[in-house]
Length: 165
Image 1 (cartoon, one colour):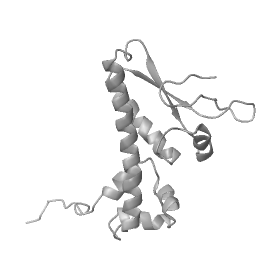
Image 2: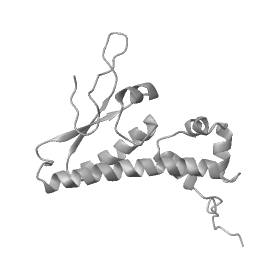
Image 3: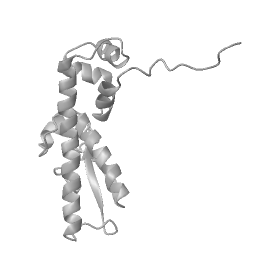
Image 4: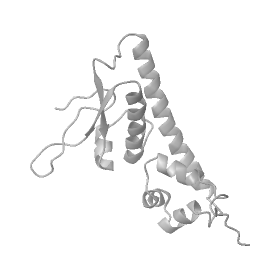
């Protein structure tokens, strides 16, 4: 008699580090760079081959808290605007600024605790989903400048509704 049951070899692996990394919008290589380790180490942690160092989990936890704080703050502002009659999905939408790299994120000087442009992008992708669920239209824009050499657009600061200039 043969045993046709399947076994899940990943069932015992703690996925917290990988989930946090993905929620921050970071590749394994980007996280490795932030932590000053080789990408193979990050992959070993995520595959359960090595324990995740406390320093790495602390970094992930701190940056994840920044992401959650940004989302909470935005949603609290939106709720306040709705209570005051200043927010109506039928009369408008939101433009969110996403960044292509660290220099553009730094140049925008966003009023945020988030320090990594990829985490900012991830926050606003999540916020966009939440705001769309409230009935708004979301437009995503880039921050940069327009010239013949690089075909990017310049936006005023990207917190809340923004306009192209």
